[in-house]
Image (cartoon, one colour):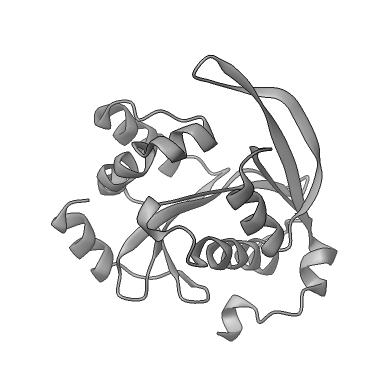
Length: 194
């Protein structure tokens, strides 16, 4: 990540807060940081993404900014350091559904930031939008992601067999969800109470 990206993220407005993390809306200039995230071999394996060109990624970010069915945010530490991307996409508000997506930089995994970001995202979705169900998908052998998702309240529903191709091999994806009544029953503090 460039010094310019880190400095710009430090100065950007925070639109949502969680436990030890903040969100700021994704901007086109964040493509450099996202390219860094997507270049991590572990993330590429677990999410089935490949780095691609920075040019293509900038175009994708620009398209996402114009897509009303998604909200993409940089996950920031309180000092403004960007540590990941979180998104609520494929929002079907008439149906009350959306899908959660999270990718953290390797050096910030395993520190509780993923769970904090997912909790903040679900608070945003259920607290501000007419969402009734948030889905998430990950490889069935991605123990870290499954732990983060279940820790944030998601319930494992099943498996989409052979639903992902990565490096010539088929992978099963676990299907998890969090329903509004389950979120309402959680006893943790909500993001707006922190």
